[in-house]
Length: 310
Ligand code: XMP
Image (tube, rainbow, N blue to C red):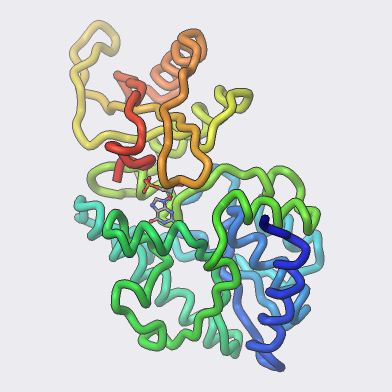
């Protein structure tokens, strides 16, 4: 049986030993994995841990402020890096999912490499978990935070990486999170992919399209907050559909709503969402986001679908 207290003790010791008297940057997104890493590293090396949130322009509404304010309130050494333009430049014109991940990964690690140098840090601590490695090795998706397994040497970005959670799964990470007293908004936070809304914006990832995706995401999350799920999302399709606006033909965007139940993200089941909730989501999206003329619900389990569309 997994024992969170023992795990914490072991990992804090190990991080302390690895990092010694050096400084470390912890790349955090507010997700449970990276937040737990930040807390463990802070316990291990105190102020020599620099918590870095990269604003890639692909996060949900208000996420950058919410996450950095949380760490600041705990008096942790916290830095918000605005790199949205760099990410959008790197993603320009790319539509193929794995190419997007590659562009995202490259930008992510170059920005982090720069921050690590600026901070005079020797290590980068990141919240890779066992499922990330497994899915990448199986050839399903190259998770953005996996380097070695796809043949990239972290040193090429000037980074030495420490991954305290690489042997445990999401439900175990949550046990650790509760054990270190993280508030529920972090310990129970639904997973959100590293490349953020880029994963849910099919086709080209432009600031305008991501903004539509972000607004739809807020509506879906608000309307489904009472429904039990592993993840709840809006996805912006690449195609457009014919719709009607002000009595005239209008080609508009299509949004897919997807809710899944899962334990470890390896398999998942589409949630049976009440029709009234779906209709409320549909009404809000097509009213509050006039560029969208069609809303769909995704029925397929994983496998054969994956949780994200790309
Ligand atoms: P899939 O879509 O492969 O997702 O069924 C499994 C879990 O992983 C998340 N996901 C990602 N997380 N970087 C991440 O950090 C990624 O590139 C990525 N792609 C998918 C997804 O949200 C789900 O929880």
